[in-house]
Length: 191
Image 1 (spheres, rainbow, N blue to C red):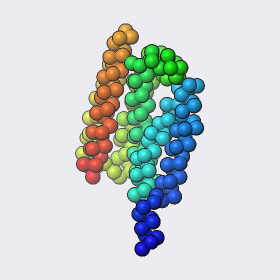
Image 2: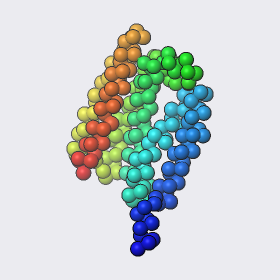
Image 3: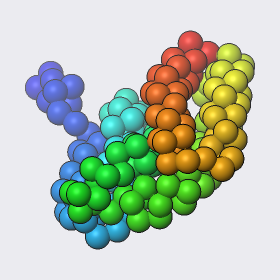
Image 4: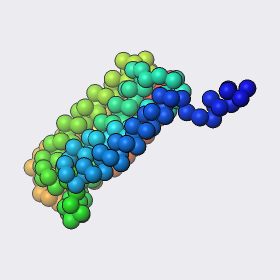
């Protein structure tokens, strides 16, 4: 009974190792990289997405395709979501000396990156289906949510003033806040 009780209280070694990896990446890679490169965003998206993988490995004891697919959705989602913030908060990031897309690549470059990562987001949301999780309800929701996401991206491809770009980025950002929980709710409900 003691060994069983310890197992229920603690984390399995894989989950503990992933949690440690998340901590190390966040503290020793992402945090110092923010002042040096826009790659900080990609590096920081790993610890940002690991909590879902932690839940998966805590439950199953291993890493497999469904856990990685869920990790992938969260990983990719963070990037265009944050790039949008870097557009409408570009002046603040510049004053803070942080290397973000809206500052380093300019508003037009940041918009293009949002569009590219959003296509990857759509693909990642559909890749979940290949792992056997999600179901028909999720599939319909992923297509509908992704279609709206890409429609918003389409609006971002037209020529815009700085003010229009910032408004568009806020719209994208707000939609991304709706997109992710609805997508995951559909995943749960579609099982």
